[in-house]
Length: 120
Image (cartoon, helix red, strand yellow):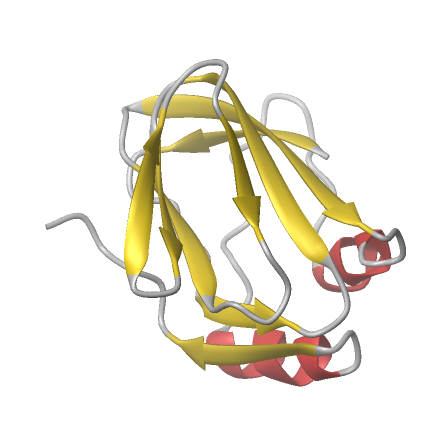
């Protein structure tokens, strides 16, 4: 999945039980929280977020373009189920409410542990 994001966009802190997650930064900067630490990633960096380890991301630049991957496959259905299609020329839909995201995530073996991190 490739997506464009803006400063402050973030995922809730969560943990996958089935898959490893990867982020390739194409453009911009992101802070990836992994366990008790973090990775500051920029263009060309690939961050590995292993299953079983709590993690989240936070876009730190004005804009960023990322490639998100999970292995093994199957988790893409989560985005289809929870997401809203992008319409060219229209602003992106707001993120789903945390409670809905938590309920949907559980069916995919993902536990939401806390709210998204913020820029400090």
